[in-house]
Picture 1 (cartoon, rainbow, N blue to C red):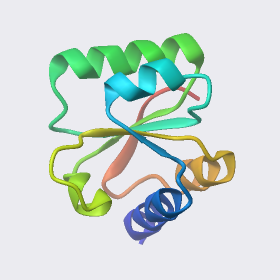
Picture 2 (picture 1 turned 90 degrees about the vertical axis):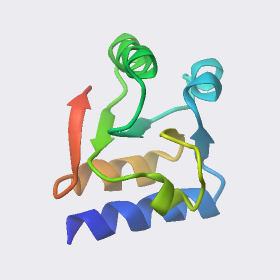
Picture 3 (picture 1 turned 180 degrees about the vertical axis):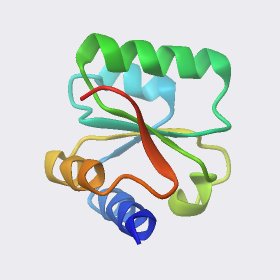
Length: 105
């Protein structure tokens, strides 16, 4: 149940333009990011960068056990940043069942 809610909130964030795709686009906009979500296939280098950003800026970092591309409807994206505070809070309140908090609050 929570997995579906998290995926629904991610889709809402996409529709309202509150998603930043990819670690290289997240880094310059880190002050706007409220939560970082990645899937388990993220490369070790990108995972280290994401964890470092999460720790340095106190941003929650969530890992998904499933391929995040299915939710995003893309083919090559493994990490996103959510900029909407309300949607980020809703995602944090519903993690579990395929999504878990790796770093942050």
